[in-house]
Amino acid sequence: MKPEGSSSCWRADLALLGIAFIWGLTFVVVKEALASASTLVFLALRFTLATLALAVAFRGRFGSLSLRSREVRGGVLAGVCLFAGFAFQTFGLRYTTPSKSAFITGLSIVLVPLLGSFVYRRAPRMSEAMGIAVAAVGMGMLTLEGWAPRIAFGDLVTLGCAFAFALHILVVGHYSAGAGFEVLSLTQIATAAVLAGVTCGWAEPPRLLWTPSLMAALLITGLLATALAFSVQAWAQQRTTATRTALIFASEPVFAWLASYLLAGEALGARAAAGAVLILAGILLVELKPITRRSHPS
Image (cartoon, rainbow, N blue to C red; front, side):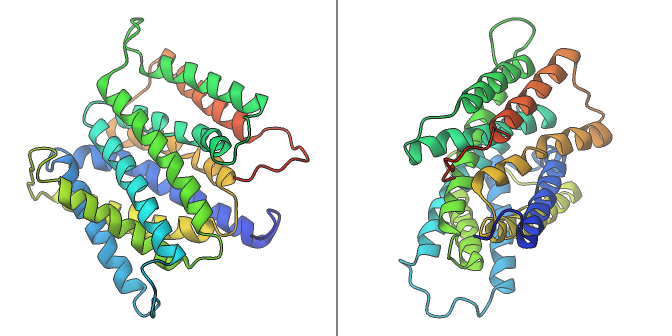
């Protein structure tokens, strides 16, 4: 990996920021598309389209690749995390708003260093523990209905996607080192497509109604937010760290809120907006911790 101050690292950071922008815009698109398709059917179509696109884009680059290779093993593991994350997120979008879904998903950025501490057997720093606490309070303010201690079902489901996406960032960061990003990208998306395809017939009643909004959503999410985005992420994480990647992805909820406000007219209430600010504050507190001599392996 090149030093963080190198031009290559900054190009990777800008590429990751572009991914966050694309993902933030897709929350409203997916919310509308779910009126025409069941969750797993939509995901199966999305990941299948992305798999086909990458198979064409990366054709001829695999050679005599072994199924036991580092890229394939990492891609399968990343694909399992990817499917779990999108399944939780897309199902949760049926029962919560796009902006709330985006902010709860943003908790994955806080969870990256926390889970990394378990993987690398290092206790969280004080700033990390404080950031997690601040973000947890913010999530409560954002998601609690009224003043009753009750979280909406969609918010709780979406929290599961935050854990899955945090694991995904760690897996991609680990396996992208010294590996071909093309194979890693295609394998993880193909794995997610297979998992969505084999579960869409029995995990929920399948439903599909071809509408212009659904077809537009599949093109946007399949080609831009999946095929392009995860290929760029695998390439970028060869040049930067998992925690730096997580910090850049913290901008995704902001883009999602702007898209939800401009396209769907959704506005956060005063308390929910304060909760969203606390979540972002917790994220930044975790990621902008004081520099110490002991480097964080994630």
